[in-house]
Length: 516
Ligand code: NAD
Image (cartoon, rainbow, N blue to C red):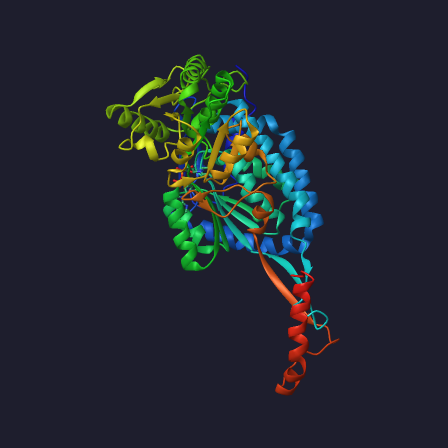
């Protein structure tokens, strides 16, 4: 097995970068062994407030430094991410238990997001002239003012991608960031942050805190100027209430129960390969993973056989090489959650088509990729997000039934359609209620398109990350309008009497010329 370049000394030195003044620590266990692996300092509410105050000061200079400076620093960080790729991949694997391939997807995405925001922020946020209400009399410009200090709250599953997708656009827009990292994944975030610090981002501008949701999490959402939350829908509702009370903005990237539609014209082997990856990459612990497969009756039998064959012969492991197909669940809590959903379903009559067992031989929290059928609405796995290792397969008759079933969910994050017909795919994509739809792929098309907005409809979230929308979250548009002095706007009754005719005529002319 390949030896890691990450050493206990490195873990300790990364942990030192957490803003925490006390001596309390958090012992973090890792998936390969299930044993305590490193300690993290625990941030208190005071530490969080301190981090926000320092970030405020740093943000003023960062915003003044301008787009060209920020672009240079972020492009340097991009290069350092790639130069330090092996170490970042090792850390992401050690902390999350995902395979090297899936860690690589994250690394690639972190670099893409950094490049996109470095290059696009100046274009998207440079401000613009707009048509004034009464041309000639006034001239109007919109500028974008950074919101200040953003609180970024991330879960444990995709430390590199999620930190990059929310922190980097905030920095590119001229904001400061205090990020509350989950205990699992904090070292990966701290190593990513180091690349940015070494590239020239001031230490205080991107601070990382740890600790309990009730203390550190609440203190953060009490203090910051904008909240960028990724996590469960239940926590998202609490964050939205807090943001509403404080009248600060928030973006909420929440849960999903994502559906894949397998139409009757697919190649069953190809479709099974796509479905297996879409359901079980990162062992299903990805917000956009597929948890519901709706397969047309006409291909159900060969598709199911190919899926079962593929999954039952897949290699599961936690080594730091590219050899395993599937990795581990991320924590003992995740193992409990998965077995809870599975036991509940089986006790109520579901059938296990493949998988269903823990694999301690491959890693402490490894679990077989599991596909269920005969899943009914009284089972938790039917509508609740499992977020790991379990997908359900339903046989449907025709496209219309598949669309209705896919949309029958409180969530609407991602969806996928497998078909050889581009026209059918497009028609179905238009009918699915989801923030992203992937054709002949599970999630990677949209997840990897960092120039396009990503987010959910219904209970899957509010707001969007990535693309222009992801940058515009972090700024307040400010409209600056100036009287030109070339034409005086009316102020007295007599002046209005004289100008009322020309004003109304102007409205008709603009309408006739289709000028908005
Ligand atoms: P979670 O909501 O329990 O926790 C997420 C983060 O929020 C953690 O860091 C936690 O410490 C913090 N937190 C919890 N309560 C808080 C509070 N009151 N104030 C401030 N911070 C608080 O979610 P989880 O179980 O750790 O993560 C899995 C969930 O995340 C799944 O539902 C998954 O779908 C979702 N997720 C969504 C996306 C997306 O982009 N839509 C991406 C990844 C994960």
